[in-house]
Image 1 (cartoon, rainbow, N blue to C red):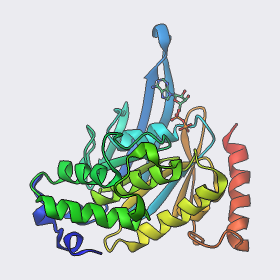
Image 2 (image 1 turned 180 degrees about the vertical axis):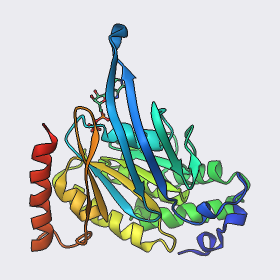
Image 3 (image 1 turned 90 degrees about the vertical axis):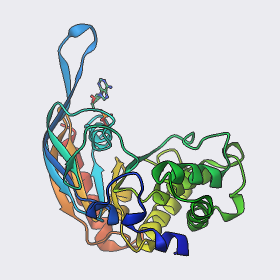
Image 4 (image 1 turned 120 degrees about the vertical axis):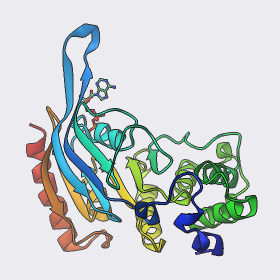
Length: 280
Ligand code: ADP
């Protein structure tokens, strides 16, 4: 890690009183959480998430897996503070989530997440300055360059987003997310719009990036793809729909294993069976 990043200690955080949870990823407590949306024309409510309780451990890669419409994105967005819960509470690092924060970063599927009028590096520097307004320019730029290199975009560092491929844009968004050292990185099918080859490549890269950080970031990753879940998640939360509930928590000792590992493939099959039931 570059010197600037190594020097980055909690006492350098000028935006908030230093808290222990800022030293690395934070634990997330999802405590009896329900989330409802009003139906159009006052016709009652849709229950998107019902009474979910689970703890995302500090510094783990946690996957939320389930069929389409089971409330995965809704739960993830609520962890980010982008929508309110209607019941229960979500706490990040012990503090109740009430609104969005630069400490909880969302990366999603869309290729249009980088600011189009800024280069790749400038997108990352911009976010670093927002996160630590008093960090000096040289340090912010050094930190930005470090993360741009780390995601493999060194050669595209000075390019604008409209000159990048979809995969490169996602790498840029991920560089920006890691660079601000979030308490939790929220990823909503971030590789969902990539072709199969690039998708597998990015899954591998995400594992590599997470491992490269000395202080592990907590990642919550939403997917409906079972192979992706097994490749990425230390633990996999399987949800069922109608309404969205916690179906099962699965420990995954095969995280990061090669795609053809027989035991990982068996877990993929087991999860597929679970998901068949989860749809009903
Ligand atoms: P998933 O991410 O698992 O595909 P979502 O969280 O997007 O599922 O959606 C869960 C349920 O909540 C769905 O029935 C969806 O239609 C509903 N829903 C999601 N967002 C809204 C919203 N803003 N207003 C009304 N209903 C919503």
